Amino acid sequence: MARYRGACADLAGVEPRRRARGGGTPAGSAAAHPQGAPARRSCATPRPARAARPGLPAAGMAAEDEAELGLLECRVCFERYGHGGQRRPRNLPCGHVLCRGCVEALGGPDRRRLECPFCRRACGSAETSDCLPLLQLLEVLGPAGHSIPSALGRSGGRGAAGPGPAGLGLRLSLGGWGSLVNPTGVAACRRSGRLAVAHDGKKRIHVFGPGGSCLQQFGERGDAGNDIKYPLDVTVTSDGHVVVTDGGDCSVKAFDFEGRGVLAVREGFCLPWGLDATPDSEVILTDSEAGALYRLTADFKTRKLRKCQMIQSRLISPRGVAVSQTSGAIVVIEHLKAQGPNSSSTRVKIFSAQMDLVGQMDSFGLNLVFPSKIYTTAVAFDKEGHVVVTDICSQAVICLGKPEEFPIFNPLISHGLYYPVGLTYMANNSLVVLDSGDHSIKIFSST
Image (cartoon, rainbow, N blue to C red; front, side, top):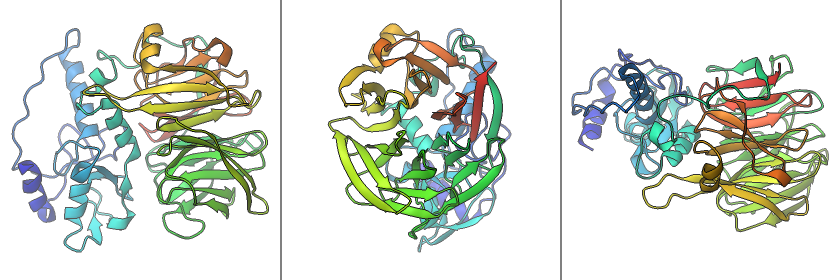
């Protein structure tokens, strides 16, 4: 902690500059260094040199070290991020990320206003928020603090071994830094082709047209009816309403595509997280802290909640969820807690429309069948009813098959992704991947 105290003591006089090995790009990107760095590191002790991994060239190891260093360190105090206390990563409104300790130090004794040390944008301490992508990455690495490649089960190469057999090609890429900030959820309107994205920008929901143009932005941070404090996921109902889980006040909020708030459900949830819409405009959502699955029925046009029913309990930290538009089956991703020094893992559970358990497979079981460790972050059904997941270990999108044949292993996308956290299908069966690593939406279609 001596490095931290020394660095923070000089924060007021630090003039940030780009390091020779990195830039001042915002955090959340695995392709670029997330932040700039202050001009000095007077209290820092030299880092021990890392031994080369077998089979990994020195240049490759250096690049890997750089990426890991940029992702996991606060670029002001150079301390490694952690889940709690002063090391917890916090987003600034400009998109740069600092640890909580540096945010408090920059805010001064009253902790009201601070200035980003990298872009000089001023903000209030209350405008900062947890950096969800980094917290999820720390969860994958586990309490022992493994390096990224070892925790993800990689030996130095990126992606799965070769292109997927589905013949999917990148058709369109939207967003990117400056348009989206650490995005967390994506959903498609099957009727209009519009895409709704939840992210940590000034306006939390970004709506794109079918051609990629920005149509609408809404949901500022605050306590008003149309405000969103911290969006975790988003879905679009068949009658054209955007529904968002807000982790900031543990609520579920619905809007029309113009950004007008039509309904907010604030009671009864511990931490609502993932959600998806049924063909009847019902909403299936997970409560990560309560370990439960809910079915929300509402008349959004008249702004009335009809029913909010718990349909499944005793789940372990459920987050991602998807509903089959044909069979009504529901798939949930559970995030299992790490045991001892091992990293966390995930489990995929499939329920029938009547909520009977059809199948399940955790990371250990998947490892017995598949060639590498899998850590799923998002899930969707394609139009044939196949379960499709994002895997941050191989930075890929993988088809696990239909519920009756679950699981199989069919890589759909194995290159060009950095940190995929969201997944949805459009009406034409184009696959939409939300990549928090480069703050973008990538749309793939058959070639």
